[in-house]
Image (cartoon, rainbow, N blue to C red; front, top):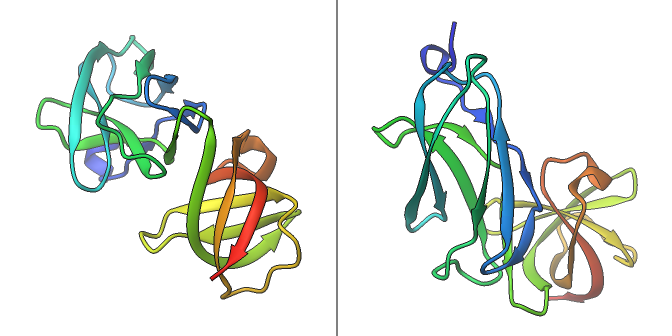
Length: 171
């Protein structure tokens, strides 16, 4: 069974997971339909932009790079996706956090659990972040605003955007 018949969206790994407008992002995917032309897009919850066409190889894989477009919302989560011409995603990335050119990220949300030293934070839009560094003693349910830098996603298992905390303010 292929990805479309299962109605499952495949992962679309990206690196890095955050950066300023103009940042070049590496994208790759496997398990897609073989030798098929797909559209690559960049999106947030309000709009999206078709960026490029790619053709998968005989194994259903591709790799490409994309630049974060000028319209991207600062300190907001955005996503890359790969689709057929109907523009319904077959593969979807984890969030990409757009920072100002300084590279300093700012995000607000509610503290969740702590796993292996990574403190979960969910935004009102249900975007998952992991806090590392000096997050202090946090309590689940606490509402905070965090300032820091986007860090390597592998530090906290890879699901959310990792922020290395410089400052945390309880709201």
